[in-house]
Image (cartoon, rainbow over all chains, first blue to last red; front, side, top):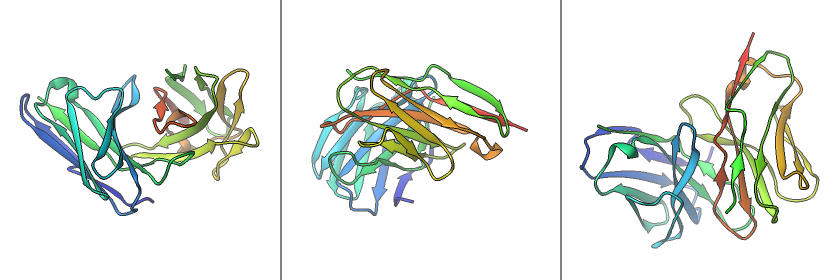
Length: 113
Length: 113
């Protein structure tokens, strides 16, 4: 299995509070991704990174920001959490451009009350 | 924009019966195609992928999928399912030249004795 960890694995928070989720990889892969998984929607891309300090938006980026100061860490921040951001969040990594496989972390279940 | 359709949200089947999980995508441009499997409370694992070459691809656990360009489909099949195949299956598509992976909404395969 690809070396990907996510922390925390579960979090319950209140509306309006800031939340940061962490993805850590030990594979030295260049690309990292954040997805959210919701029933009836599958997985949707929030943000991705193609290198240290290089990030871009996905299809559902509103309300989220990301940072990547080191190859191994990709942080997802909800500046002011809302109930609509209750979801399961997955981090993924891939090594290079082209037809490369994305490998997924175990996920973080976030509940915003 | 690319989109992926998995028409069946749930497929119940008896053990040792054959199964087909359907996947259609919208764009006819050159694509890479993937099937991922998600077991309960886990992240996604790559099941198989089509990049180029032979249109029939196989996984190590007996699943196969066939790329049909004219019908823009990538259906997943298994001739005889096991209880352990119970999981959610996601089809995903990526246009060549782009990093973003687009997922379908998933099909839950329920195998009963």
